[in-house]
Image (cartoon, rainbow, N blue to C red; front, side):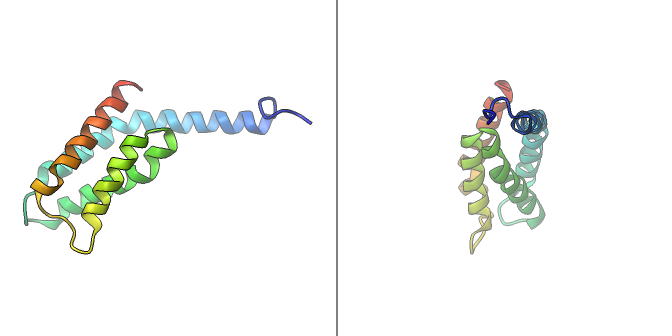
Length: 114
């Protein structure tokens, strides 16, 4: 029986996964820009649309980032998603500010080391 490292299916899977990881990492600056743009548009108690965009960015990152080894980004994204998706979703910049700042910093670090 062939070992996993010589199994052509395993090699193909690893190559495909690495291609997906590279693509995800290349998209991080765009995802960061989307986060910052939505955050900048959020204002306390005002239009709900930017808050929903912010939650959407956080939700997508919370699901995908851990798959590519970005555990901190995933955890912070999940925290922001949870904050913005609760029974009474957060609509206060002061409350969400620390999580957004930490997530932005984690994205900066991930982008710098990719």
